[in-house]
Image 1 (cartoon, rainbow, N blue to C red):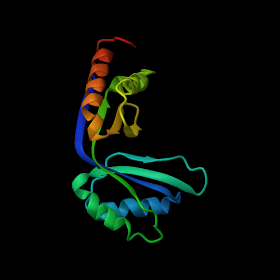
Image 2 (tube, rainbow, N blue to C red):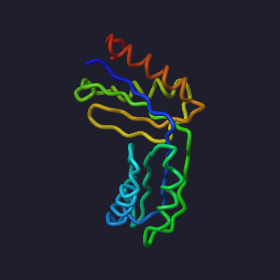
Image 3 (cartoon, helix red, strand yellow):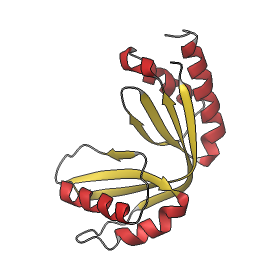
Length: 157
């Protein structure tokens, strides 16, 4: 399989900082989002260093307002979310990533060379998803496509 690159536009990144690391609260947050019928895509939770953590996730821009209003109704939740709308998700999917050390490094280097503002990164064994700002989207997408093409041809690995 060659690298498959997908793009999602109109993405809101919601970050909740200094929230309880209690998984019951995290479950409450995502249950409330589910009850709204809001689809969550990228989720990232910072490593817990105390009883607090940071949680970030993405939703479509059109769901952002009702989502933020709903978060205020969660019992014991008082953190003001940081919200960034108008973003894009660039995802690279390739089965070859699983057994290819340095694949992510190549993608990250390509992004670094065009000085892209990456808001959040989520990975699995075969996928890298990056939330990028609208201002950096075109250059980031070109860099990722160029990098994926060179990886497909075996250049630089």
